Length: 123
Image (cartoon, helix red, strand yellow):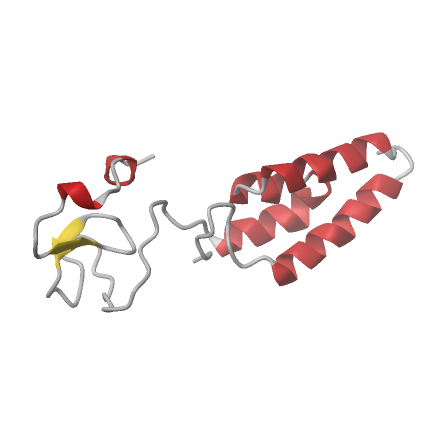
């Protein structure tokens, strides 16, 4: 994890500073664009303490390894990933029943899941 996300608190900020919602570096409150990453800043912008996960990676993992729950492990939904892995293994990889069930579940995840396990929206 990058250093700027490890100590993500307001105690280290100056009176006229805030964190960039994209890269997490401290910036001036008056800045419209982050001088580090160039992302436009909004006054009502929600700041997350963790970097966002990539939606494209999540979808690709779900399509190719979804029956094992790898996409949920990537997104931080560990319990769901464990459930998918166990269903695939216990219902039989040989007969494909478990893999079929969890693959359909992965397709539903692609459609419905918009945030990672920390509540940060995918980019």
